[in-house]
Image (cartoon, rainbow, N blue to C red; front, side):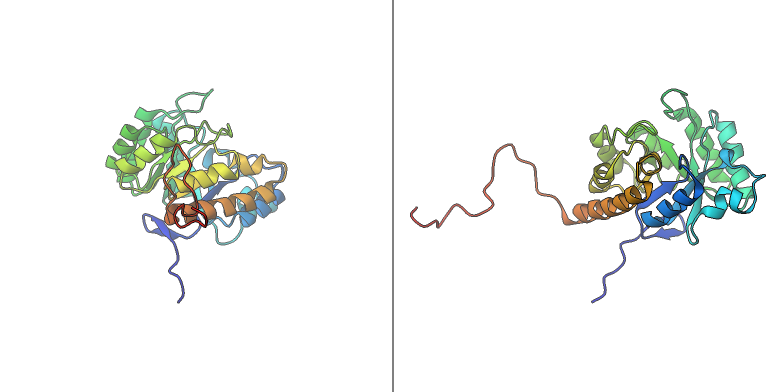
Amino acid sequence: MPQTPDTWSIGKHVFTSRLLVGTGKYPDFATMQKALAASGAELVTVAVRRLDLTKKGAESLLEWIPRGMKLLPNTAACFTAEEAIRTARLGRELEMGELVKLEVIGDKRTLFPDVEGLVQASKVLVKEGFTVLPYTNDDPVTARKLEDAGCAAVMPLGAPIGSGLGIRNPFNIRIIMETVKVPVLVDAGVGTASDAALALELGAVAVLMNTAIAGAKEPVLMAEAMRDAVSAGRKAFLAGRIPMKLHAAASSPMTGLIGS
């Protein structure tokens, strides 16, 4: 019998790939295009404020995004709610759709989110018809406030943006998933394939990354690794891992042994 596709959704949008990717930090557009295609991702995030709208044709980043990938405009580099709201509106005016990855940064050194500004901007954009995916810290209380504000998902950080440290507090991620009913996507901090697998093993519906792929020595090969890791992590979550124990448990029965 054919298997039912393992899909997930945000608002009206349905996806099969649980890997979301970015477009920054690649050495060139051609490498970016190959890596995006190799990732198998269906949703690609683009920083609206970093788009050079004077570039046309092959000089424009948007021209290099593989056909069929849906754009997820983001409000990267916005440090106030007002900036983020204005940037989200610009993305929609550029016909990038109603999806928005909402970032309101509170600190230039750590790039941690400004929680107050994030909730404020979320409320405004939800009222304006946006499907809001907020980048937030790994705080269950904030996640609940964002859900109450009408966000379609929450995206807690695994570690600081671009740090490659992996998921520093898996327990908070699990508590967030117990706290909210909207999808939880791990965003930021992934460094390698095992980090991506862990995010899915914890029960996150998807994971978003950029630097881990773009900054790798072989970005296309790393994109393939991340694709496979996300698939493996999801399968492990569905399969249900065995409980962890302090002492050994024989894999073969200890009764009925010859000579016992």
